[in-house]
Image (cartoon, rainbow, N blue to C red):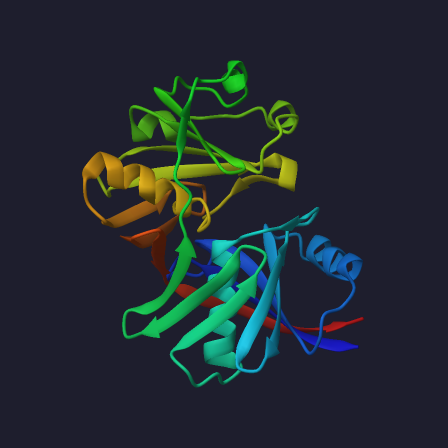
Length: 259
């Protein structure tokens, strides 16, 4: 079997920035173990696989070690491939996923994800916060992620988690965020249990960050930065129980897989 594969930098207009994702269009669903092996071979934070069915698409995402239920940057990358490289003519892509129906809209401003939000639930700061470091002022549970709020961008930038220790905590990932002087808020995302020590830019984390910061700022439009080494930028709009997440993309590579 020969398959096309694309590598796309998402949530950035600059090559070698943002979050790289692999995208593999499929004629039909292949074995789960094979998809996981492909993702492990790619060694990127996520590889997206999709199948087209009657003008709609089914999508799944794999890290190098596990399948995940939702991934923003790889969905943005897949939409770019469908629109720009596979010749899809409509202005909206409908993805059916394990997190429900997801849409990506194309406009003169670029591509925008439309994802369901998850409202944060306030909890006590856990004892294992030392695995992440810093001194967060608040802690929240957001579905299968934890969210920690810090006093400053400097605190978030200087975090040096113990990934081996953090891997033992049962969670998909750990979001660390604060206000910023250069944008509305910044964040970092750690997911060692999923095989990703630090994700460069995490669209799915913003389904949890945006409702939190909407409550703080009392507004619905945000410009956010994820301050990983690569870095990335996101424009977010809260609309009821969903959030629109807009970001630029850059194609890095197209190749072929021989399976």
